[in-house]
Amino acid sequence: MTKAELIAAIEQESGVNKADAESAIGAFFNIVTRSAKAGDKITWQGFGSFSTSKSEARTGRNPQTGEAVSIKASTRMKFTASSALKASLNPGR
Image 1 (cartoon, rainbow, N blue to C red):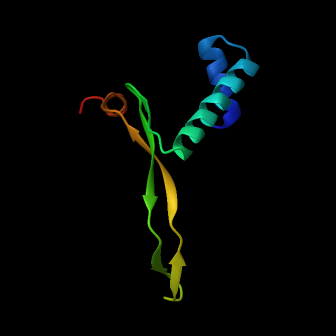
Image 2 (image 1 turned 60 degrees about the vertical axis):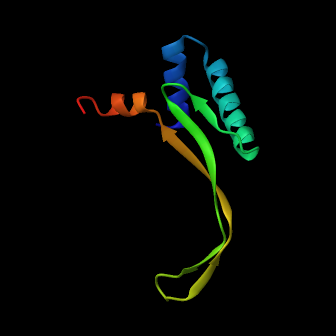
């Protein structure tokens, strides 16, 4: 689903106009980004949570040449689905 398709779906589902839907989605992503940068975890009951994890600097290998490559430390964004979301995706399990 593209950004435009998501905005249209929210517009139709919620009854808000396109500009309000786009503004709300933008605000949501801005808040999640700011919270992640601050190291906070964002949890939505029944849906899941967004958090970050850090990976240390390490040495990897170029798979084509086998040459050692330095990989910098980084922060990654992680989404963990709630048990309710998992159950809705896998009915009958």
